[in-house]
Image 1 (tube, protein in one colour):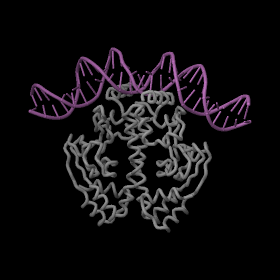
Image 2 (image 1 turned 45 degrees about the vertical axis):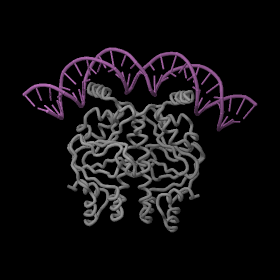
Image 3 (image 1 turned 90 degrees about the vertical axis):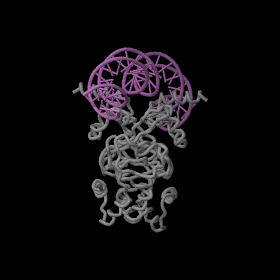
Image 4 (image 1 turned 90 degrees about the horizontal axis):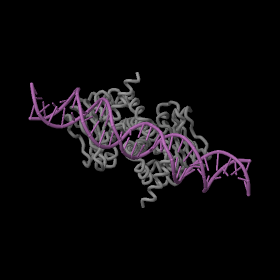
Length: 193
Length: 193
DNA sequence: CTAAATCATTGATCTAGATCAATGCCTTTT
DNA sequence: AAAAGGCATTGATCTAGATCAATGATTTAG
């Protein structure tokens, strides 16, 4: 149940058995069926979520009603509207399940209780954020300064596992492309080699 | 000399006078003349930099020799190649001064010494990262899902101070646009109202 | 104070990717 | 197993923004 999270945390910091025990008491396990929502825009963003098994995606809906995929999360990833979680505001993203999924949910207060009791947890959070920051930076630079084809190839290289599990039109959305464009790019790449 | 940094840190966490004193011993003040480099791609990224006064920018140069502005930093901002700093690798960004600038430089080891001695500094770093993460997320979503005009208007709204200090073609680069395009957008906006 | 860069603006094209539309292929659902 | 809704693919256009080019304006250097 908690194996994946344990591995994830202890790969970054070390914990005493008591500390780990305490952390597990602060997590709420939950199962989500494919297509169900975990969070909807406008909800209070009371929790952050760790994926044990399965696949989730977060996305925004713009004024024109268009969906934009912000993040995918598979086993071993955290997902949530960090901005709303931190500022205690209403979520501006939706999160739903792309597969039947098992998660651990951690409420804001639980998070804070852990920080109080488990000193190294603060470092874990910092390291987690650092990693995400660096990854997002790469994505941003790629978004601003490369062609559609290059974006696709980079993603292929960086997240081959996700590319295989997720519908193609959602990958297009994640990259800021239209499904038709991605389809043509794939065709071109296939014929190139 | 250290006022700006002191204000910045204590706005997020509280420190004892001794702790603050220790932090100041770990900073290296430096002045940089306009157009000088603070960091060049390929350098070891040994430090992270806090801006006391003035304005810096970080940018990449792509295969075609084109510059892409990644970040601006004015008084009260940190700047550096975080990715390279964390992983102890060579920088992939350049950083140079857009005005005569005063900074405090903190080496990786100094950073770690502070974390050892000043427990709340870890939280400061986490909060700093969180804020940056949220801001970058906004930028990414805007980059992927909005028109050039909207990007410009958003930036105007979010960083009016930077917009006034920085050459227009660098703002274009930051937004992933060409200078000509930004010029036309500005013209259109001016005529709209 | 003058010459030389550097920068913003404007006009005339070009093009990557979007949009519109149609077809067939898988998944779900019944 | 049939029907239906969601997907990927392909073709025919369209368009936002890029590119190329020229002209002033403004900054910088000597």
